[in-house]
Image 1 (cartoon, rainbow, N blue to C red):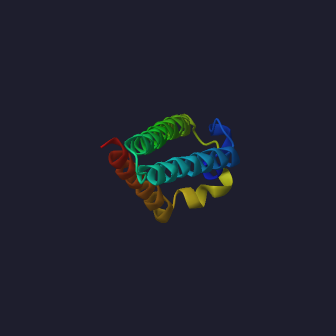
Image 2 (image 1 turned 90 degrees about the vertical axis):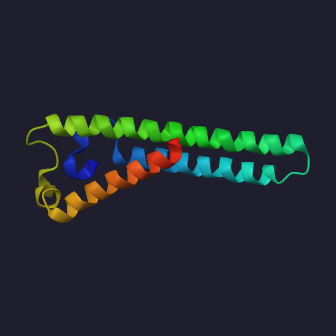
Image 3 (image 1 turned 180 degrees about the vertical axis):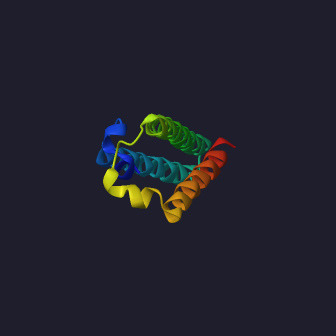
Length: 119
């Protein structure tokens, strides 16, 4: 999205966003995995430690989701106020029906994941 609409509109480079959010996903999955292993402990304190590790993983996941939503919202606001700038090479792609379907699909997926995390 950043490449198509213009990297000048984004606070971060596309590569930076990819690296940061891939690292977040990796660390959240590690917390969940470690917590799941610790929950299988025999002692009550081990089980409580496992639950606490899993809760930290979930909280970190929700925090990163909110941070990502704020970054996307800022990009969308700058994109909406930008008239005619950005990636002019990709005007045909950005105006196609398939690309607009991709945008709506990503929004739907984000809303579904957000609802799942906030339950």
